[in-house]
Length: 441
Image (tube, rainbow, N blue to C red; front, top):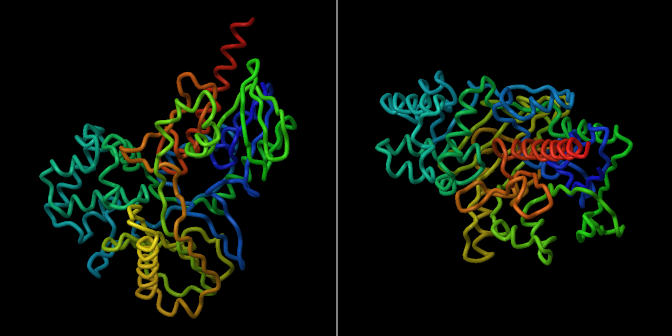
């Protein structure tokens, strides 16, 4: 079976690693960019390792990566963020973030009675009996809840932090999605971990796994430009080659791009409901210092301005030169603007809010900055997981392809959805192949 995988991000590499592990397959991963990994791309500058987005993994002990570690023989280390050094800033006051029962008792974002209420809600989520899962959205649940405004704000803030979206968008996330996500996270003994060595630690091993099978290859800087079906085979045309013939195809790219590629094909109609899905974008502000400027905490979330800063180097020492420090700031972004001028002004205000947070907690940071990168609209996920968007299933009725990526149905959010959907697509293809083989013998 000859397979084409279109897209060399986390999902495409995961699918290819599983498929290339089967001796009866051959194939190609097509990636339009010069590098692999997609939005998990990592690069070095002046001794600092910079990521397009955080390489934090939520609930790693219950994460798809644990299955991949065993099944694909991946080897990596991770380190947990110190929960006692995670803080919220609200109205200028710092307080422990309510990440577990110890911090909930210490935090000032809730009163004593509100803490009791919130602990009860966590227990209900863990027990999978919380009413939230029956509501269309978090907003609808909160509107009908008799909880205090502080408890409601905390729910919005938690969802904002884990889904990388604004509180307004947090209210649009399905209650079932949130209940399932936090059921998994609250049961985790390792809620927030960093992969030591960043995403490159994972992507390089996936690439090596693919390259170990001489019947598989990876083509970078080679976007697929068209695809047709003839006599039961898929014929691909790329930027540099024509008439490439495959038995199966997996799309591992944003569904919006898939739709553009297949817009004039017989399968466009099936993809129509997904073509206008909105993506999740954030402002990312990376700054590397030549020395440790200050380390008052490992993570601070500004509840008033909806921005946070992670001291990445406090958890992952591999991302800095000896003695250095690396901070990554993230600002959740609105996407509703009257015109480009309003958008530009808004992004500039978010940049200033981030720098004000640096000024407050990292004095003299400007004097010791060795590396700085500001990405004012970095895509975190190709499909924002809100109820007005629709995640793409791995298989669509009447469509002969499989799909995977962070915009597809799968376990978890963001990177985990890419991993889990890539794994699921590969397993589905191998299962179908085994069934076909059994029927022909």
